[in-house]
Image (cartoon, rainbow, N blue to C red):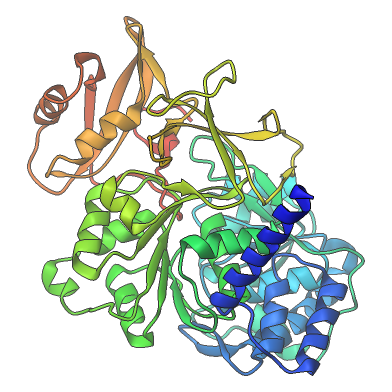
Length: 541
């Protein structure tokens, strides 16, 4: 009986969250019938929410990009026509996996929904890929169709030579193209009004891990349904039928998730192909957006703008800023909130696990480097190497069990589990109040002269130096010490490597002082803002 009562309480809480956020609203009986039909026909996958939004608000604004506004029904009509076109030009047997190499624009959304309507896997590709990386991933995932922006034509060349019969469709072009060239806009126009047959299987989305130190893996996740959504809404104040600016790249797990949440809430998504810090602020004010979704480096770039530029934008319409994808520079978070209000919500996520924890503004005011508290429905443990739970303040391996199941990697690799919990691959600690602090990756720890060192501790100290704009610290091989720390910094002021070493030595033990400090113009980052360690000078790939 207690179990049944607990389930009932959970269901009532979920209902209260969904109604309170206006995710659920009163509608006509006819619309409810249509919603049920869609759910029976499509089930729940990553793009079901777009179809449901088209029933709820067919003529409401769904997507705003550089080319104007599309309604929810426009997205359904365009994706249906694109799906029919892809079947026609590629053949039904070639669209099992559709690769998408697009920036944030209508073509990305068309391709995403269109792939689902074919029952295909949508393979979301990193716009920062090199040609060989792209070809490797496409070969591994069995993709024979690629939709890509014209600017990436050179990157696709390797795949063209390695994937037999590759079908190429342009997603965005800066000027009109010949009707003989396959493009999303051309196929949408040619097959307008047509609907693909019901697929034999549900479409899926393949998200790639960041691949900052190696080849990215493809991860499949099912999604956790209403419980997971309610847990997120409890932490981040999304509201139905409002406007959000999604600046985070949509091919990445975080940006993709923000797009899907917006569709689930029937929120208008405003986006642009390339991130520009001032243009992003302008979009928020112009559209009176209630939410802004970014990766942390975008917030940093915004706060790097001159004060005179920041003064031009009030952002008074914003209720929240949601960020995830990489470490947040504490100074930038606090500077943003000091200027625009306590709006930032920093999520700790994993491609394999979905949303794990959220640091709300009060948490970030308490400690700007915290990853916050677990979302409701997600269980979190910090354990030692033997799997025993450790106490507050003790660093250990982070284990997660959440509402969103991990369906495995596409290439057959396996994720480690311990007592039903997924091993995240990160290490961290919990404070006495249950806030999580991520110290680094499990394999980041180095042993230098017999002492254990986590590079992130040194990064935080260097990052607090007024002349340091960005920093990453890694372990490199050393004949005398086994390993040693090397720091790579980009500066915004005057400081020598010796100055920076002295800064660290004044605050940390001597063995934590980097033996080498390399000054760069900028650190190499991928499109989601994560630092690409293998591209640092002197680092073997």
